[in-house]
Length: 120
Image 1 (cartoon, rainbow, N blue to C red):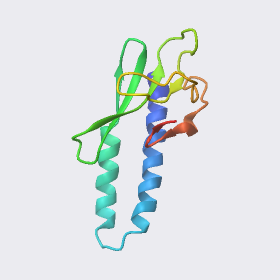
Image 2 (spheres, rainbow, N blue to C red; image 1 turned 120 degrees about the vertical axis):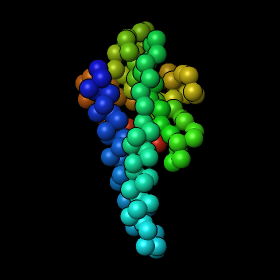
Image 3 (tube, rainbow, N blue to C red; image 1 turned 90 degrees about the vertical axis):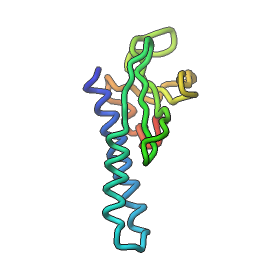
Image 4 (cartoon, helix red, strand yellow; image 1 turned 90 degrees about the horizontal axis):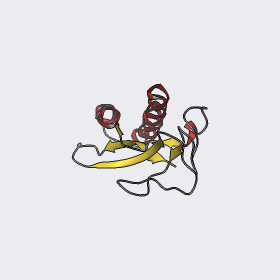
């Protein structure tokens, strides 16, 4: 399961790199590359996975690392509504949105739903 979760994190990192590249293309100052590299490094090292009783929680930090936010959840074991590995959007800090799964990490579906802004 950890390898599959790492694929989700890598998809989020790659999406952030694509997004930050577009942002820097519009900048007009000479330090754009340095700023872009700092932003990418900060985001990529700020992604964390926390194991809870029912879910793996994916969190990220802001640019300075002072604030954390939840990017999404991955179900650890199946229940009445979800299978093991289902990707769920965050409803808040401690709970996922339980309306429907955004994909499954074990069967490889839904990696396209893993954006740098979160699972959704």
